[in-house]
Length: 72
Image 1: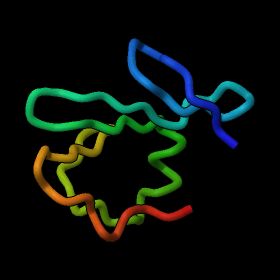
Image 2: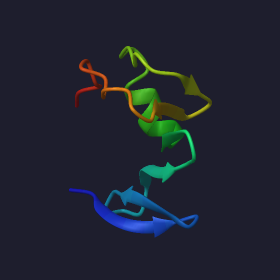
Image 3: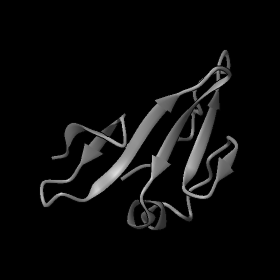
Image 4: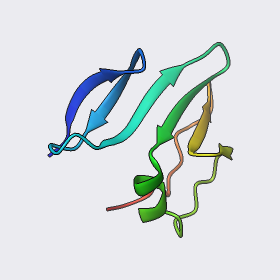
């Protein structure tokens, strides 16, 4: 199970050995979820339905959450 911690001044979820799985941040027009390379690789084949960047998935304010989110 992952623990919540503050990393790079943002909430993050950290695997027990210390590996950061992902972190979140809020901005004026969107929220971001930033994935570490190993986490992103594990879900690379999953469609996101939202804007993505290098290691990030953007979630615009006012838009519904994607219905087909990645699964473990």
